[in-house]
Image 1 (tube, helix red, strand yellow):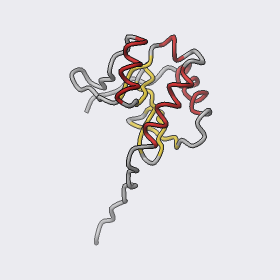
Image 2 (spheres, helix red, strand yellow; image 1 turned 90 degrees about the horizontal axis):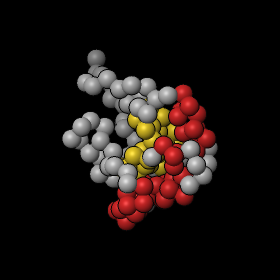
Image 3 (cartoon, helix red, strand yellow; image 1 turned 60 degrees about the horizontal axis):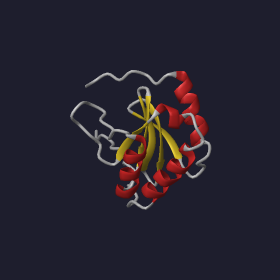
Image 4 (cartoon, helix red, strand yellow; image 1 turned 45 degrees about the vertical axis):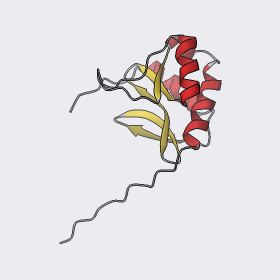
Length: 123
């Protein structure tokens, strides 16, 4: 299993500020990184020193064209097609708000994921 580097404190703080704008989101850790979900679907997360957003096909194309942003790859050669890496300058600006809203709307429109049940051992 690959080891992941921790997100820098300033980025975690900024993530928390952005996540505070989305009260409908559930916060959790995904692979040790802070993430926001709605109906069990992740729409925003940190991964190492990057913020990632899940976007619809049209929004993703517009985002990539506007910011020359890459598709998120947690490991080289393993793209997560719905997710983009947010450029640092956008993370620190108010322009991120609209993209987070779009990301939330997209994830909210996906089928809800059923909560994972905890298995119990029979003795």
